Image (cartoon, rainbow, N blue to C red; front, side, top):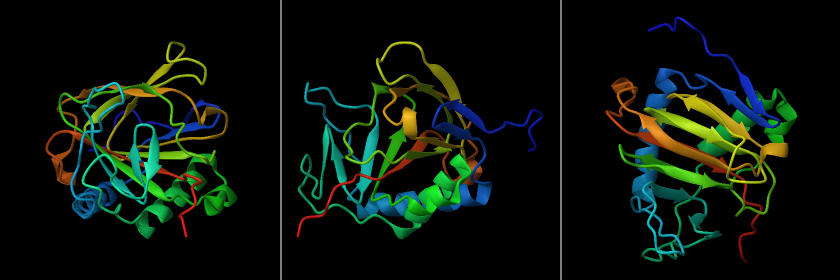
Length: 221
């Protein structure tokens, strides 16, 4: 159904760009199917346990590298020890196109070499607290895609978890890229807006967040 008020591209802060509706309905549907296939390849989803003992409410599957608080490995060190599932070429292409479109710079897109993706699943009760993505050795941008229910995405500053921040509603199909001066900004997902998803993409409730990153890590040997 056409929107009464179109949503425009917004640079939320220097280097942080929101592109509403970047994926059309068919692209969303295909990516949901792919996400489920990749989750199976990864051995299913798990809720990471923090060093303090708390368990994240968001469930996760990793491709290319396995993320755990606060690092990366090539095996599921906080699980069954299996080798991490490969990073799909398809996601590399999506990541390059996303960076090129976000920054309106084909060269920035072609130079982007992502090697890890995190598939995050938010059910009705899941949240993500304020954090900064500091476990990578690369300063290349983070690419974030939303599938399913709308979430409130809180994007802050690089100095503190506290204000100033801005709340952005990310709908299914939206792209958010943050790099440059905003690469290490704190961000969070304080809530989902229930009943906002379109079942036509294959999700009846909840949200996938697919984040694509370049770790800067070398594969041993």
